[in-house]
Length: 280
Image 1: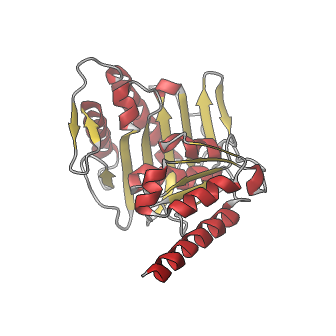
Image 2: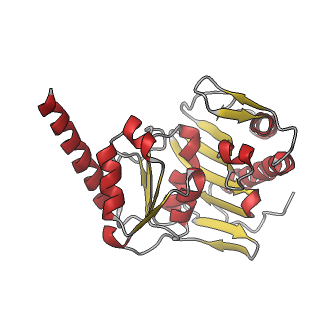
């Protein structure tokens, strides 16, 4: 495994080193199975796909954690588990499974350590992109690519009209939040794209875009980003504004734009509710 001893020393430095080693383990499995002709794919009850690589990665990480942190809990997308008090490792073996199985290189393994309900370590590893992002509470946020590793920070954009937004497709907003809120946010910003899944939150953390919003998420989809984005100087919350990764939705911003985005979303959603009430 690569030498990660150059990381800053923090209260969670050992956990961060372990998380990055877990990501190395995951990368070895996912890169070997990416675009494999014999990749096995099944459908879960919610109709989302799961590949043999998803399961293999989670099992491998769980095995390492059982040996290295036998007293810690584990909650993963494929094998289950709950986040309770104390220490829990939250795992998404492959975030962006649809991309993975179609041969699109935008997917990643997500690893977070949650202590008493708050993420304190986060690692996001996207080997097909040659990228990795990581953070620990109080130690800053970092990334690595072909040029080496560097500390990252959010952008300084202060107006929604100047903001670069990434969000998910309209259908998820219609089903889980509000069509009007989606359109209001898109219309208020300078430019919008759907980078999707993990990547948009990482792009906020490194200052490439300014806002990432998702109407529906699971805890394992975003646990690393609460610590990654905040350590990069930004803000992370659900769409109600609660600073939590398990609220069922997600909003990452550079901090300056967080309250304006929340206000816009609330106003649009409230106007929708009012119109619906008048129609009954």
